[in-house]
Structure formats: C-alpha cells, structure tokens
Length: 459
Ligand SMILES: Cc1cc2nc3c(=O)[nH]c(=O)nc-3n(C[C@H](O)[C@H](O)[C@H](O)COP(=O)(O)OP(=O)(O)OC[C@H]3O[C@@H](n4cnc5c(N)ncnc54)[C@H](O)[C@@H]3O)c2cc1C
Image 1 (tube, helix red, strand yellow):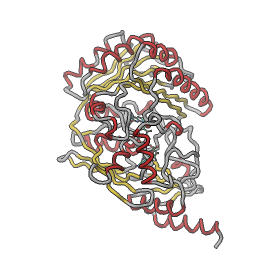
Image 2: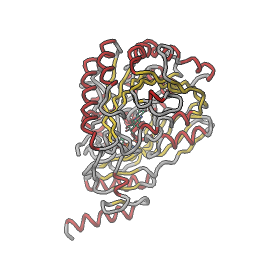
Image 3: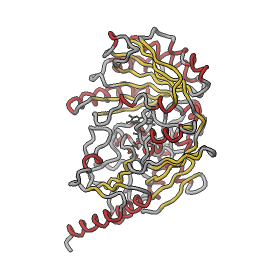
Image 4: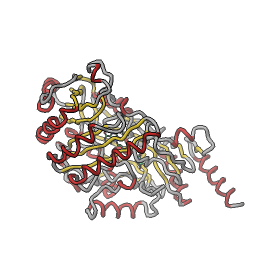
C-alpha cells in the first residue's frame, strides 16, 4: 500500500468510526463548517470530525494522537482570532453536541461542549435559573468558559469559571477524565481561565442561580457627553451593588424608534446596564451615571433575563469581518480618557465600537491564583471592536483598532483577558514571568506533551 492510499484508508476508518461523520474538503457541508463567526478568518483544515457525542470526540482525538496530527476544537466558533480552525489541524466540530440538562432542585446544569449560551439560557430560564453567560447569546459555552467568561451576571454570580463544578474532558491521548476540585484538581485549575488547549471538554457542569426578570436597558447620548459619562462610570462602578453590571459603548445610533431620527447614523455613547436584584430598585440603579448628561433617548425596563441576553445579538452578525483588541486598567484616569475619546468617537467604519467595562463584585472576591484567570483584580477593561461588513474595509478597521490599542497602552496592564484577544499571538495573556503562566506551561507539558491541542500553534 502506498503512503497516499494508507492515509486515505486511515481517514476512511475515522469516517466509519464517527457517528456524526467526517467532512473532507470535497464534501458540500465542508465549506459551511470550516467557516467561523469572523468572516476575516479563511482557513482550510484537512478534515472536519463532526462529533455527535463524547465517544466521537474520543475516536477523533485517538486518531489524531496516532497520526501526530494537531487538532482544533470548534465550540461555538465565535473566537475572533479564529482559534476553532487551523490550516493543518483536524477540526473537532462540537456543534451537534449542544444538549443542556437542568436539575432544578440542585440548581445544576449539565451542558455539552458545543452548546451556545442561548441553548443554556432557554433551558435554565424555564426554571427561573441562570448562570453567567456572554453579552451575546450566540457565543459558545466552550471557548467562553475556558477563557474565564464575563457577562451581565458576573458581579453577582461570579465569572463562568466560578460556577464550573466539574468538566468531562477527553485528554490529548484520547483518555476520558473528570476534572473537579477533587479529581484532577490541577487540570480543573487550568481549565478555568487557561484559554483551552488542555483537553476537549465534552460536558460542563455548572452552578445555577435564581434569576427571573432583570431590570435592564440602554440610554443613548451624543458623543460629546463621553468624557462626563466616563468620569461618572469610573466614580460609580467601584462601589456599585453586585447585581449591577454596565458598559459604556461608543457606537453609531441605530434607527431605533426611541431615538430621534436626526440622531440615526451619528456617533453616540450608550450606557447599557443590567440589574439582577430587586426590580423596583432597578428603576433608579443607573442614575449616578445616566443622570450626568442629557440623553437622546432611552429604553429600559424589566425583561426576562434570556430576552436581555439576546438584545445585542443583531449587532454581531456572523460572516462580517472583525478585528478586536483588548486592554485592562488598574485606574481610569483623565489621561486615559483623553487617549480614548477622540479615537473612539471617529472610527473608520460606523460599525466599529469601543466597549468600556468594569469588573469587581463577586469576580474580585476570589483569589487571583485560585484559577488560571489572572485578571480579577483589574477593575476596568476596554474592548475595541473593529467591524466592517465586507473584506475591502478590513485593513482600515484593523489599523484603527491597533492604533487605539497603542494609544491606550501607556495606561494599560501588561496582561489581557484571553477571550477578547484578536490575534493568536496575544493569547498568552498573562504577564511575563507570572506564576500562573509558569504553572499553565507545566500543565500543558503534562496533559498535552506534543502540543496537539495547543491553540496558539501558528497556521
Ligand atoms: C459577539 C461576541 C460576543 C462575545 N461576548 C463575550 C462576553 O460577553 N464575555 C466573554 O467572556 N467573552 C465574550 N466573547 C469572547 C468569546 O468568549 C471567545 O471568543 C470564546 O473563545 C468563544 O467561544 P466559542 O466556543 O464560541 O469559540 P470557538 O471559536 O469555537 O473556540 C475558541 C477556543 O476555545 C476552544 N474550545 C471551544 N470549545 C471547547 C471545548 N468544548 N473544549 C475544549 N476547547 C474548546 C477552541 O479550541 C478554541 O481554541 C464574545 C465573542 C463574540 C464574537
């Protein structure tokens, strides 16, 4: 048998073993599944293993380990750097593994590794329960959780990783293990914020919290109010109640009925917030920020949490071209405001946004080294969202986002939240020489010595 026919035979054996099937480049579905949320990512894996269950994941990983073939895992496919797909790596597509089981009496959800947050919200909200998920409901639970997981509930309920009780993991050699505080505790530590690469998580077991309606909304202002709002944001958020999470977004006014027609298409600043405490209290909760300037329009009220979770989905359409940067800050002083405002107010494409976030609350009450997420003590972070509808504008939005990052750099910490990095090269998001970085490197060497699952491998 020639080397070529041997390779064909081994792909054929894998295809036969997988219940979910194997897509080769000439398969009609290959094109759809190789594509990820970010349309700027254009990579072609040699094959795509469509995993129907944990047994399929084991079969695909064993195959790759035998062949010394690198792998990438596609959870929700949302990663902006496109970590779910690589040119010379077998893609493990977990998209069909999206089942969610809820045990309402013990307030626990068991979530398969390819589920999206909207799958989880639908299942948990049926019981008046929820756990911290992403600001956009089409984000995958897998990558999001492995990178820490910030969202509207984080300051009350903690990060996604703070609610992770157990993970079912297929290791790089194909063995299945359970990681928790009591079993493979070192692996469990690294899965929580280490940004993947230690194994394929086939099931996340998460703690749930009672969450019914939230009081949430958005208040829009002319962009000229940005400085005043940023100062109010920095003054109020450190002492805000845990149930309150907000962001200030530089964006372009959409044609919404509660905004004056003259504002549509103009650059604005929006205060978006979510209060998951007593709804009556919610009516005034954002006032220390929202009352500091005259709004153009506002839309606020009590809504089911799952509805609020989907509010921003239309602003993040799949297939558009994106380039993100992210920076964290120990303080939000006036020099940072001066660096931010002119550039955020005038992007090259009106779809571009800048999001100013805060942490604190339950996130900051856990020790920084308790998990591999080493960014808990940063009170503020800023995401720069380069966004254009088509490939032609990509270089422009990338340069704008990079320019803004450079302008913020003198004020920023050295580390970055891994979930928001726009390039694989930034993924080692821990400060150089940090203990967490050293510990993660040792874990990777132990659980994946060949680096077959390493997300930062180029190509
Ligand atoms: C519109 C949008 C909104 C976002 N909002 C938030 C937010 O509010 N908060 C936040 O923290 N982040 C947010 N993110 C960032 C997001 O969490 C990360 O991009 C994350 O990587 C996406 O997870 P995914 O499963 O969809 O990604 P994928 O692209 O499928 O995977 C990303 C990485 O995770 C690995 N991975 C995925 N699933 C598994 C698994 N089951 N087992 C092992 N490895 C796996 C992949 O191999 C890859 O390295 C957002 C991203 C987008 C595009």
